[in-house]
Structure formats: structure tokens, C-alpha cells
Image (cartoon, rainbow, N blue to C red):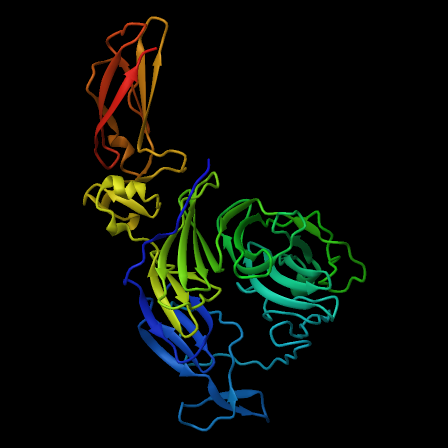
Amino acid sequence: MLQFCALFALWSTAAQTFNLDGHTSHVAVTRDAVYVSTEQSLYQLHLDLSVVRRVSLRGLRFNTEPRFVRVSDEAAWNSTFTVNVLLPFVSNNTMDVSTVLHAESIFLGPVRSRSASKKLVSSSSTPMTNRVGQSSPYSRAPTTFGRRAHSLAVGYIDGFQVDSFIYLFSNVQTSSGNSVRLLWLNAKHESGQVKSNTLKSLRGVTLSTGDPPDSRGKLLASSVITGTKPLWWSGVFSVDGSPENTELLLFDVSPDLSVSVDSDPHFTVQNSTFTEPKLVRPLRTLLKQSHMSSVLALTHRTHWLFFIGTTDGQIIKLVVDKNYQSTCPKVLYRANDDREVFPKLHVDEVDHKHIYVAFANQIMRIPVSKCSTYTTLHDCWSAQDPQCVWCNPTQRCTFESDCQNSSWVSISEDFQQEKMISFKSEINTSGQITVIVELHMSVGPNSPDNFACQFSQDCKPSPPPSYPQCTCVLSNILPARGAECVLQLDVVGAAAVVPGQKRVIKCK
């Protein structure tokens, strides 16, 4: 089915903002707070972006011992504590960014450039060179890994862990161009040398942009779709290396155990032989849109929600159904100037009603939907937003969590149907007409028990209504050659009343 879309603008002034004292380095969100680092400061904010505290990253470094002491903004200082990875460790639902709980000195020396690679010697007996990432393989950011050739430039993009597998995504610049690489590491080992065996389990593939099959492109942003099996992952790719030609692609990134261990031509632990990595093509192109720079993927019942940032300051929402069909993208927010959206977007982990968007020196809290702008059941359903439901007790379009008694209706599980109610009529050889009515909505837990249909025509004894269908066997047998009857239908229950649905039944 062809779908012609334009970007619908839904943004308003509802977004909350907080201005920073410098350029954003890292953002992390927990159930209780938002943490932001800049070149000079580390912030702890409430979820509504009001300030809890700010601490300076300026301080004094003592050469006699590996110790760094923060100082005030007015005090003399000789060093700046740079945050390379911001990963909140929350204990007892509290975190105080003004207190240093543990300090450890680790030598890091870039081989080529600061952003391309780092050198780190692990605590295992297996040395690794040109590793990029953190020193711990068990956090959301990636573990360290090695690079086979010193002439390669590696740009780390994203990493996460699902169950025992660690997933690492990077751009590798080779003599033949850029390659988007996916690496798997298995962190589940029974023996004592967990880190060493994890590194030795390295497998890798190359991700293609799909057309032509060997197209490599460049990965700009990444987001895993959690809770899916197989494991789905979305990536924003620059198809030709320019920001004007970007696509949102869908991949199955489940670990391929058929790939040989430690045989990758770009990354290795100790093996001296390698094989050409397998090329993995995307399963679907979800969106073609210029200037995309970031993506956040969420699941909501049977739908996938994609929030996409752009280099010109837009936040776009895209909804995809279980058949991988999408609605037209909608603009949730547009900046007054062309400010690039930070590569990582974050969701409010408590209510999932807001996302956190970082710009160069500002962070914003933006609503994920504008449900309250739809004033009728039809408008609420037509918005095709699974996060919006029509609440029967209040007769309003709202978030599901705001509807009492879970008595609501929302869009159906797929986007194939263009109407809330569809009719189908069947006629047998004796001229008997059976009308089947189907409601194309999702309903709350308390809605199907009340589902019923009221027909204007008399029905013979018919199967009882069972959501989402009602059946009416008309009591009158119409002439075989043709006649028409008008069927008036009221659907009651299902958290709403859908009145006045008229249908002309033609007998052929």
C-alpha cells in the first residue's frame, strides 16, 4: 500500500528547558534524576529539570599520588576532570554527585586521535591494544576491544548488553571506505577468567545499508528495541556520507553463532588469522528523511515508537505496527534555530510520557504525545498514536495511565484499516443475509466484557457478540436479484459508544 506523507507539526510550548554552562558531553537518566556533564560541570537534576545540585569538574591533581580534588569556581586549579562515560550507579534510590566514592588511576593513551581509539591494559593476562570504551564489560556502555591494524580509524557509536551478550557498534574507516561493524561478546563463562574469556568470544559482522547489497554507509545513531525476540535494532545511517541523505533502518542483531570466534579482520584478541566478515542487510527501511542524527526506540503494546532527532533541531515521532507498516511521521518539536540534536535521546523511565533531548548547551523535556489536543473519539483514533486512548469515564483523549478503571479504546494493532468499524455481508442460496461487523480498535482490560452491538433491523438468533465482532442474521429474506436495506449500528461498551454507523447492504 502506497502512503504519501508530509511531516505534521504537533509541537507546542509544553517543553521544559534547562540551560547549561557549557557544551553537553553526556546525559544519563534514571528513575529519579537526570545527570548531565559539560566541560566544566556535572549536574544532577530532578526529572522536571529543576536543579538538585551542580559540582565543578575543575580541581587540583596531585602528582605524588593518583588523587584529584575538586575546587570551587573561584579557587585556583590546574586540571579539569573530564567525564568520558557517564553511568549513574544508583544505590537506595539516591545519588550524590558531590561525593567521590571511589577513585582509580588508569593510564589511557590515544594511538591516533582522542576520538578514534584508546589503549588500555586489562587485568587479565591477555593484553589488548587500541581498545575503545569502558574498563568494565558489564555496564550499558561497551567493554573494551582490540583493533587488528594500527592504520584503521575506529569511531565508536553505541553499545549495550542484553542477557549475557554485549553488542558493540562502530564505524571503521579502511582503505576501501567506511564499514559499519557489529561485534558480539559473550560475558557468560563458568571459569574464573571471565573478562579474558569474554574478549576471546568476539564475533563480528558488517552492516549494509541494503541497496546495492554491499553498500556500507555510515552509522550516525543507534537504539535497540528492547523486549523483542529476535532482537531488533534500529540505526540512523548516512547512505552516502552526507547529512542530507539519511535513513532509519531496521536490523535483526541477534548473535550469529555461525560466525567464527576471534577471526575478525579489524578486531582481535590474539588470533593471527582472519576471515572476511559476513554482510548483514537491513530487514526494512523505516524512514527516509534528511538530516536525521539521533534515534530512540520504544515499545508500546504491539507498536514500536521511534523518536528521531535531526541536525536542524527537530524531534520527529514515527509509529510502526506489528506488520512493520508506519504512520506518517509527526514533528513533536522544532527549534527556532538550526540546532543539532545530541546523538542520544532518553525517555522518562517512570511514566514514559516525556523524552529528554540535549542540544549543544541545553537540555529539554518534551512530551511524547499531544493527546489532549484531540477532542472527539474519532479525532483521538484518527491520530493513529498508540499512546493516546479515548477514556470512557472522562470522555477525553488522554494517556492510558491517566484513564481510570482501564476503560478505554485506542487504535488497532495494524494500520491497514482506515475506519473504526468495518462491515461484511454474506448471502446464502436461499437469500438469507448475514452481516458481520468488526471494530478496529484496541481496548482496555475492562472493555470487552461490555461489548455489544445494537442493530436497527431485527436479527434472528445469532452468535453472541465477541470482541471485536458482532453478527446479525437478518430476519427478512431479501429478493435474490436485488434490493437494499439500511443497517443502523450502535456499538456500545468497548469503553465508548460509536453511534450512527449506517451501512447499505446490497443483495446480489
